[in-house]
Image (cartoon, rainbow, N blue to C red; front, side):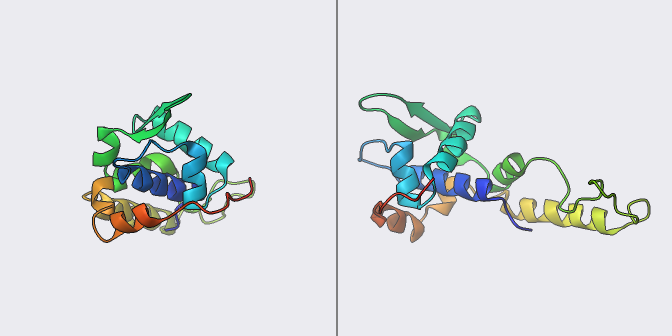
Length: 149
């Protein structure tokens, strides 16, 4: 299974926010630059994470992004399911429907494999992902030039 870029960025944003300790809350632009992701994409991800109650955003002077308790404790498997959304790995009903769809066993097998993938991630939380050595590495990443976008 391959995750969408949106889910990948969301997980990396959550991981970055999980290691913010005594520093000022980073802005979306700062997180985008640090994680080397276009600002426009990061802004969409942050909006979705805020909607899910995983990230708090504050505008203005002293504002920025903060991970909520729910964000730190969020199951990675649950996040992947939520962010990837419902649907099958393969497109059987597209503009040109697959001629095998009425008797195909592949679709069901791929659905089971996807669920097994997510289930293997269920015990992991955002907090688990930033345990050493990842957390200290994330703290050491400085923001380079912001990517285009």
